[in-house]
Image 1 (tube, rainbow over the protein chains, first blue to last red):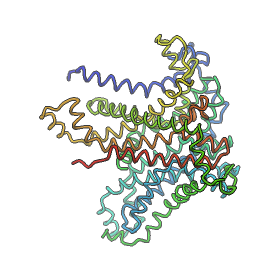
Image 2 (tube, chains in turn orange, red):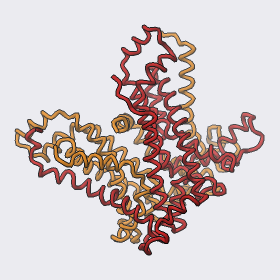
Image 3 (cartoon, chains in turn blue, brown):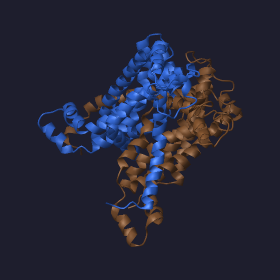
Image 4 (spheres, rainbow over the protein chains, first blue to last red):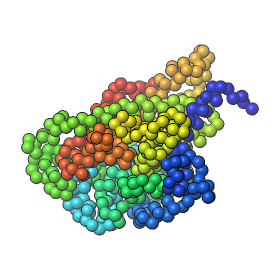
Length: 284
Length: 297
């Protein structure tokens, strides 16, 4: 047994205090989402028990008043499409940039780095006007409106994805590709059979982040999706916050409903998430 | 020369074309168009430009005279400074502490990083509940502890800066924490042992060994923190909406959105967007100058 020195105890105290600030607010919201409406303002710290304030009414009301199912569906359509498209397109581009030697390679790389600098504010208005001219944005059709969100979101995630993937593809040993080529594979077969499996974990990271950023993004979605049946889960929550008024139980339940799916993804995949993000950030 | 497999350049088109098509259409072209828009007169999102502004640089003159924009800029610069000092500062302290322990380090990482994956909209709503005037978590906590006798209005003109900034900073501490911990893990253990032999331990070890070696990673963190602070939109928008309280709570992001969408001032919105980009480049260049990355070892 090692002795616990005062210094160690101090360190653990500080670390635990910060951990409490990240964890406790969520626990507080979850507890209060199960509490009877009137009780939240008087006594929000106790654990609600059956018979003394425990209720499922907040969830029933949230489900009843707002169309969560439809909003989840919209969010999933947008985020899954964005994720798949980013993986395919960014994977191709990263592979091309890492393995081929060509004249404009440096220019392409700089363009991608520059792309990381543009905030979405500076591109959104022209994109909206362009898509409106194409007849995609504010056309009244649900599928076209969702497409109008998907396209700029793909572009917005590409630069980060390409840079992260380039780092990983670089570390795949060339000999593997050479021998596959000698065995008669063409470049595309090499990509799908050698590169993608070898860089699997980095593709997972990119997929997770594209999904989370797309699912959580408020700015772009708010620009393009204005009709109730087009609303995604983030927009629905934004709407609830302006409509719920003083019904804090309803608000708490809504927060829990949107956070839980993300929480599940995080708990199961947290190793990929943290590893991939730091790889990208430290390199860039 | 590269391996034979990659001599033929034909397939390259297939690999690069989709990505650059997307980037050109949805990133580079809109960015250039946005510069042009800032000189034009546009009153609605879907309507075409009605010629150039009179004078064509009119919006840029407005930038200097608009009192709300001045407020927004002031708040944003303050937010950027707070971000650098507190966000990266707290992250650095936590990273140094976690680096010195063995049991539970992984658990702390998971807990600290966790707020980042939650959408700012959900967090905004959660913080609205926490900062509620009547019965919010903070007011209940403080009055239960006997620290306040009257509820504090966290969103009034005296407190709104804290209420707006604290959640933004809190959310991203974990992000810089994880980057810094990775940087700390890359520092060789031999260096610490050598320093200890020379009688350098504890705080002086941090000062003379750890911090200099962490300089490049810290620099990355600072640039990310600065550009991140300029882009902040979701959390303040959900918590404060359009410039509450009394037009004092604007940030460049929320003000640009409000001008474009709620006031139909599309060309002015474009101008503010350009200001945001210019500030981002400027600030991150300054940070790079001050904390210049150096190649040690």
